[in-house]
Length: 125
Image 1 (cartoon, rainbow, N blue to C red):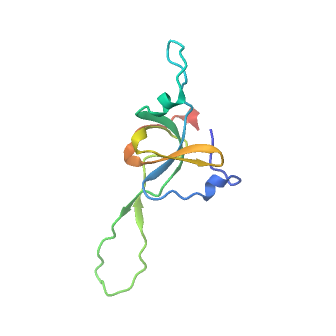
Image 2 (cartoon, helix red, strand yellow):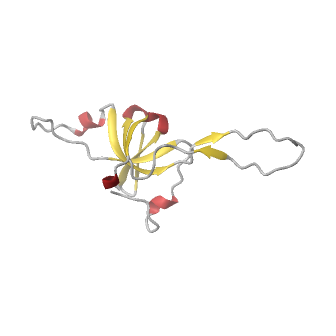
Image 3 (spheres, rainbow, N blue to C red):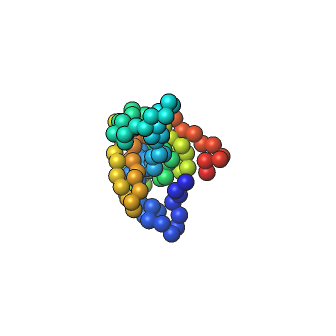
């Protein structure tokens, strides 16, 4: 599995909002009967799977009104964290995925709402 470490370039990436960076699993290029499928068929499947590489901070939460609004305070944005965590196996909807290539690796960015299922098995980490 490909992880974010201090010596690779993925640690410099900042994922925004409720987005998740996923490295797709290599899809099966054969049917159950042994026929080879062209890449265009496997790329157009509605549901894909992959490993979560990085996650955004989450959904911004509005700050509550204070008792003394005339006081100047530093606005700190608070976020509701996402359910996805680094290392999870995710099943996601392909139609909402944005494909990109970074360091000769294929990745997709999907909003958390497009993730259907997360598998957080210990053996995936």
